[in-house]
Structure formats: structure tokens, C-alpha cells
Amino acid sequence: MLQIPNHQIFSKGKTYSALAQQYLPETILPAAISAADQQAVLQQLDTQLKKEQFYFVTDVKTGAITHCKGINQWVGYTDAHFTQKKYLHIINPAHALLQGFYATAFFDALINKQLTTQFLRPTCITTLALKNKADKYIYCKRQCYPFQVTGCKKMTAYISEFTIIKELTNEEYHTRIYDNAELPNHQNDIVKKLVQKKFEDVRGFSIQELRILKRYAAPENITSETIAKAFKIEKTTVDTYNKRILKKAENIFGLSFGDAKKVAAYFKRAGLL
View 1 (cartoon, one colour):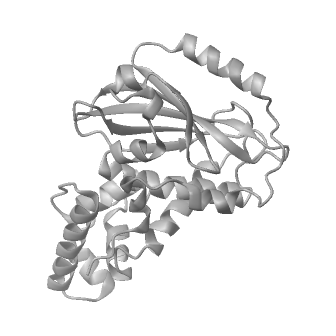
View 2 (tube, helix red, strand yellow; view 1 turned 90 degrees about the vertical axis):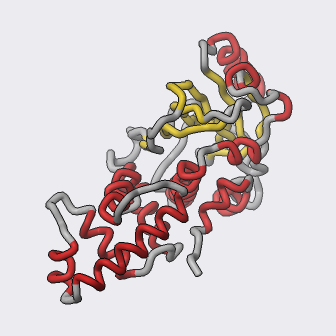
């Protein structure tokens, strides 16, 4: 039986609470940002929102959305009743799976102090698709930045600000971590390595299948024949692996790839290989 990656729970309405329990200290430290300062930020956001823009604030500890604006106007869901569960449910399934990998990697990097946060300093930019009330996927740019931090710079709330780009056609999910002046400029590499490890750890693909995928993802033109020669196996065996890879990838991501080489190219662009 194919083991679907645990990170797919993010597309099934779960919150980040399990991650938050690891990330936050048992005794929450005093908030560094006053309620008045936060309210001023929200008022400024509310007045400066442009056409096809919306945002919401997420509490890391509970996973609850505490404030949002523009959801009703541009996505079709009532602002007052928009929840984190609803948000995760409307992410395009293939994008939601990748969002799960990147979210867990991001939180792990925070836990290990490989990333730091600062009030209103952007942490990452993501492009992903959300399903609106009309059942159409809209491709959006999402910028995320801390809305509340503790004295030791632990993030306890964050803002997700969205700009609609277009109706989704074949655009892919993408996340980039912003550079941090306090840490070396290799934070994207840190997160990418964590994502790759998590992808391997869920064991959706066997060790040999991953080896083949990595070969196909190489810059040079790799064929089934060259893989068979490199691994000292029959080409027919490689062809069998190719079919398994294709079936698993299409099952997990809900996409049509065509062949194993295209699966590898997609995985490489997504940062999984």
C-alpha cells in the first residue's frame, strides 16, 4: 500500500498546533509588541489594502485566525467566519502538500534557531492557489511576516498577506525565504535541505525510486539505459521503477506527469530533490 506523506494533513484542515507545541516554550514569554502597536498595524493594513488583496492574522499557539480583511470581497468567504481549517482546505491539493513540507521545515528551522524573526520583517514569500467561493482556483502571492514575538524573538503570531495574480492554469507552488541580516545568507538552502529530508522521511518513495528520481533530475540528459548501466540492473527493471514512480507521484499530487523524468523535473523545481 502506498504511504501518503503525513504532511498531507495540511490539506485536510488540520492546524499547525503540533508544530507550535514544539516551537513555543511551555510558559509563554511576555509579548514584545503591545496591543496598541498591533492595532495600529491592522488599521494601516485595512486602509491600504488594494484591489484583489486580502490578509489574515494567525495565532501560532492555537492555529486560530484572529483578524482578517478582504476575504469576503476577493475570495467569497465571510471574514468573520474564516478559519485556519478553511484556509488549509481551499489550498490546491498539490500546493497544500508542498506547503506542508515547507511549513514544517520552516518551523523546524525556527526551533533550531537557524532562522530568527522580527516584528513585521518579512520571513517568506510564497505563490500558491486557493479555491474561491465560485470553485475556481486563483493563483496568489502570499507574503508572511511576524505580528507578535516574544522578548527572545519567538514568533507567536504572523500575518499572511495575499495578492491575487490570476486564475490558476498550470502554475506551480513556490516558496522563498527572505534573507536575514543576522544570519548567513543561506537560509533558503537550510530550509530546502530540511524539506528534502522530510520528503525522504515520509517514505512515499523507496530508496531505489529516490535514487532514480535524483538521476533523472541531474542537469545532463539521463535515460533509462544510462540509469540501468549506472545501477547495474536491467533496463526493464528501470522501466518497472519508472511506472511505479509515475503512479505514486500522480496518486500523491493529483497531477498528470506523463513519465518519471517529468516527475523528477517537477520535484526538483519544488525543492524536493
